[in-house]
Length: 148
Image (cartoon, rainbow, N blue to C red):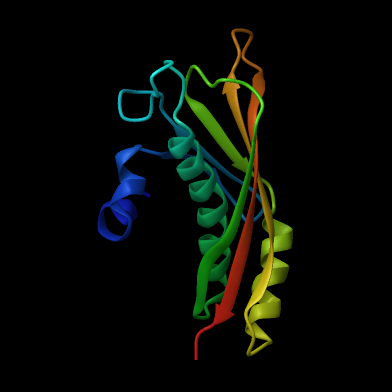
């Protein structure tokens, strides 16, 4: 992901995201809390949170497009965020929309039109007991179109 970021989207690489898990159904990305991602209050800057949500949802969609062995263009058309708590440590972004995205890819491949649908991403920090505590919820409007 870092190489892709440096080559295609340098701002993405600046937050140093790490892929923790990537499968057909789920993607987990970690964004570390560090100087470049921290705001003036010491918590993660909302721009870094947006990049993390983009990475988790976008990487899962890119993986499913790659598995289709077809050419599909991907873009996010809308973005909604609900911030639940200040994230004061590394943030884990989880997208479990693999089945819905796979179905959307199939619809895009069967159509000449752009196909859009929501992709939900949860952001959480690791609590002292090892569990994950939600800090934000995102809905990104994924738009796919088969390339001619």
